[in-house]
Length: 142
Figure 1 (cartoon, rainbow, N blue to C red):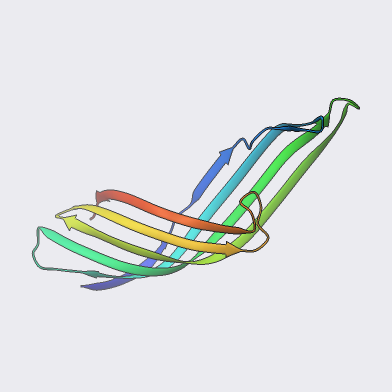
Figure 2 (figure 1 turned 60 degrees about the vertical axis):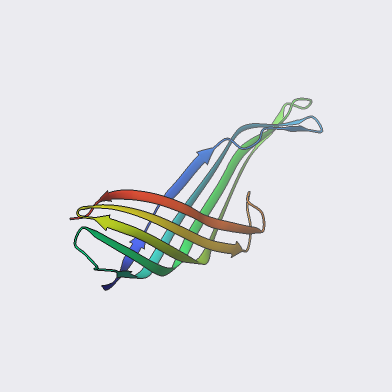
């Protein structure tokens, strides 16, 4: 019933940050990007109580690789002056993963919780950022 492995995920989001005007300055063509790559070593235990339904649970320790960028143009309509800004922040966080699931013949369903905290340079998320969340998945095992 015991097993282990290595896992990784790749999460990416691109969006338009909040557009605002301050003191006559305008933010134009703004774009924010964030990517999170969790890497995990995990162990699991499968309960082989019968061949039709095999529940399992496990725990993993990992590393979150986080990269965030913000690009924008600041425009002053009074002087017609504009300046392009680009900033990029990368950081790492140690994380945990807890998961449980059930395999029904060749079909499985899994619930996974991941968490990591970053205290560092910050970025659009601020000086302290929590990454992770809950994943519900299912599929076929061969």
